[in-house]
Each structure stands twice: as C-alpha cells, then as structure tokens.
Image (tube, rainbow, N blue to C red; front, side, top):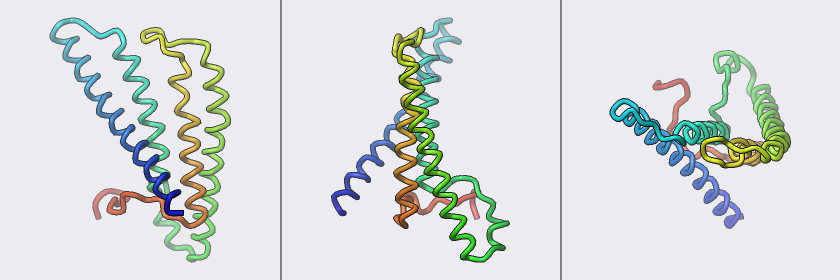
Length: 167
C-alpha cells in the first residue's frame, strides 16, 4: 500500500507540475507575442496555436485537480441545514457523479481523440488529436480521485485552501 501511495503521489505531482509549467509557458508565449506584435509588427506563426493547446491542457488538468481538492460547486448554506447522514449520502452521490463524468471523458474523449488524429493543426503540423488527448487523461485522473474519495481515502494535497475566499 505504501508503494502504491508513493507512485500515485509521484504521478499526481507530475500532473500538477506539468499544469503549472503549461500555465507559465502560456504566459511567456502570450507576453512575447504581444511585445513582438507591438514593438516589431511581427508575430510568431505558431504562438496562437501553442497558446490554445496550453490553455486547453491547463484547463482540463485544472478540472481534475479541482476534483482532487474537492473544489467543485456546492451550496453550503443549504446543505448545512440538512442532517449529517443526508449530507454523507449526498457526498457519495456527488462522488459517483464525478466518477461517471470521468468515465464519460475517458470513453468519449478517447473516441474523439482517435477521430481527430487524421487531421493536423495548421501552424505546428501536430496531429489535431494533440488538442483532444487531454480529455481521456483528465478522465482517468478524475476517475482515480473519485474512486479514492468513494473509499474514504483523502485526496486533498493543499489543506490550507479555503473555499469562497478569505474567512
């Protein structure tokens, strides 16, 4: 069990680091693109396409990380008025719904990725599936987090985050 946890944390850390590197890369590319356009009237031909790829990848990885941290939408002012047993059952229903969403991303994301592999992105020449392969990856991550949460294993890695801003 300890080895499994260490492997899972390693994969999780890699995914989180990759998303942060993607965000940083996107900021650098957009900043360079704006500066070169304004100062030199020049734009790198690949910059908009790579920025779009990074934005899509960062967004989908953010979805999975948000599920891991249990940062999904909730109506606390309503649920606090309900009995604890009902809230516990509601939490399980939410986790099952998240698992279903992850499964949807895996199945249909993979189908869509395969379907889009024949075409290519115009500026970079990468297969169009590069844009969509993050869907099944996010689905696998989401399913893993949902299953862990269903079995009562805590997935939060950032315990000092507060929902709704500062309290």
